[in-house]
Image (cartoon, rainbow, N blue to C red; front, side, top):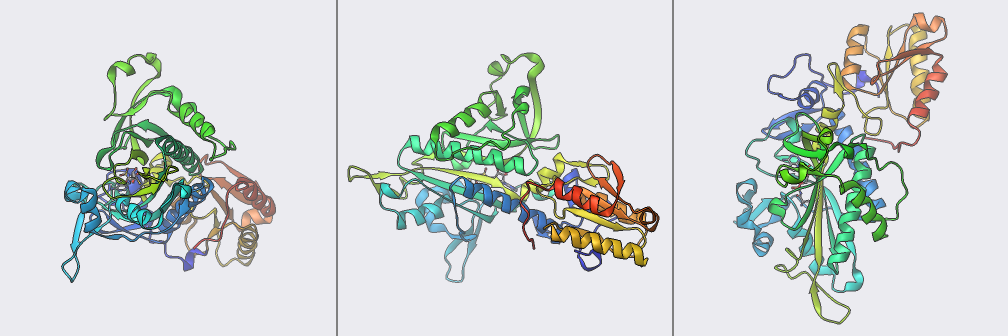
Length: 451
Ligand code: 5CA
């Protein structure tokens, strides 16, 4: 993409309404624009990151054996009356009447709708296990929408639902989701720690929240610092093997890590003092096992091996996709701007032409651009006729991991400059070598043509 043809409305001023870094930087980098309280338009740069996160979520869900689909945002109130949640959900639910005076609502989550699909189409235990998921916009009329996309009213969530014959099978589904989430967040360059939590309006006995540690997080968390040494990495795992999934869950949940809702001071005090941590975290996902809470009232049964109908055991599992954009920035920025992890960056590298219009500089930039594209990478070429200082400031603000700077002086010596956004270190090298270095930096990342 050439910056002269892109739509990147960066702001010079720091917006007064933004209280935390990620909100300020998303507005300044032209990623989002508020449409109304807690509701945002995703401008091209923000949309690109959102799509990247969605792709990672899809890839990891499909890898775990879960099946993608899409349910609508608007739902009929009748289903929620069946589950008993229509009245319980309270003011957070946006209720709408259609022209026939029927009660509708903008879905805050999808347990009812998926259970209705299940009971219409699945009749036998032989069709189990089954996990369906979608990535869809949700609406919760939050009392205090704030921090930009972190606590929105309209937000993008991946929500998945497992259907199993027995509690034991459903716990395998729970564990499988935990493993797939560990992989998902690590691919996004994040450490998200599973913490025992409270189930709130979703209900159920077993639940973990995934928290990214950050001073601006809304949740207070208590943990044993030993947990931060754990990495899932690139281990091969057979998601169909309950023992393997359980072993990973046990490894990642054996250390004390809880949100304030489930915190146990006496238990916490048993951890050696130098490892006790009280901090803040951003909740980027949550998994639930709730047994037959929805299947029983809604009649979601299957014929069991003995021919008798049994209500299925269910769980639901969410990832806050739009919140993650903010969470990644909270975890990775400096005073100049965003620092994207390579797995989610909107463009792989910036090309800065120090002397636009200089035939040699222009030709070198074009050649580098073409070489990067040929590798499947997406460069953002700042081809505007602007001062170098302004071009650098824009690149630092939007946070691409790598910048190639091209100018007549360097070209005389046959070199360009390659700069790492994270370390700030620059190196002079021939253009072909700069391109090679980027190929290596992105080896192992999924490259796909993007929007
Ligand atoms: N049905 C279950 C799991 S699918 C569910 O709704 N879980 S949830 O309430 O925990 O939401 C899942 C994730 O969505 C949360 O972990 C959080 O990351 C994200 N989320 C929830 N509320 C908001 C909000 N107001 N703005 C942005 N993200 C949110």
